[in-house]
Length: 192
Picture 1 (cartoon, rainbow, N blue to C red):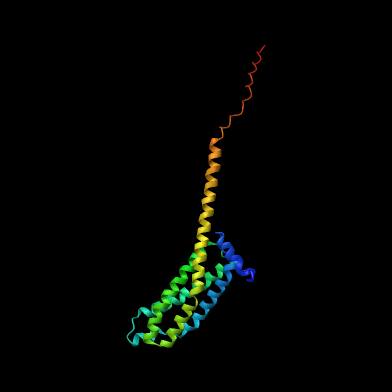
Picture 2 (picture 1 turned 30 degrees about the horizontal axis):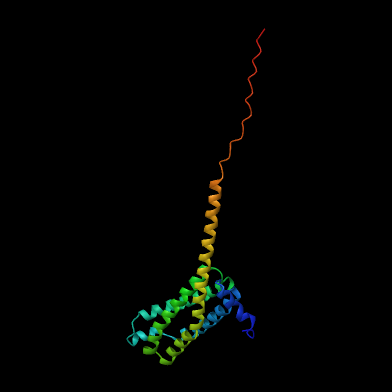
C-alpha cells in the first residue's frame, strides 16, 4: 500500500476509522456524476415521445419525458450544491434521491425508446446509466457514512447536554442577597 498515492489512501483511512470521507475524497465522485448527468441531456433531446403516441404508445410517456428533463435539471443543481459543501446531510440525501428518480425514469423511458423509436438510442441511455453505477454506489456509501457520523455526533452532543443539565440541577439554589436594614422613619417635627 505504500506505493499508492496519499490521495487514495486517506479517504480509505478515514472510512476505516469510522469517520466520514473528507470533502476532497467525495468531490471527484460528484464531478463524475455531474459529467454523466450532462451526457444524458443530448440523449434526452433525441427522444420524442409525442411521435410515439401515433404509434400506439401511452401518452404518459410524454409527461414522463417532461418529468425526466425536470429531474435532470434538479439533479444537476443538487450535484453542484453538494460539491461545494459535501458534509451537509440534506443536499446529500436530496442528490441521492434525485439520482434514484432519474434512474427509474430513464429505465422506464428506455423501454419506450426501444419499442417506439430506436433500440440503439435505448442502449445508449442504458449504457450511461450502467456507467454511473460505481459513482452512485460511492455516493450511497458516503451517505451512509455521513448519516452514521452525524448520528454519532448528535448522540455525543445530547449526552453532553444531559450531563450539563445534571450538573446545573445538582447545584444548590442561589441564596437571596441580604437585604439592607430598613431605615427607621424620622419623626416629623412638631409645629410650634
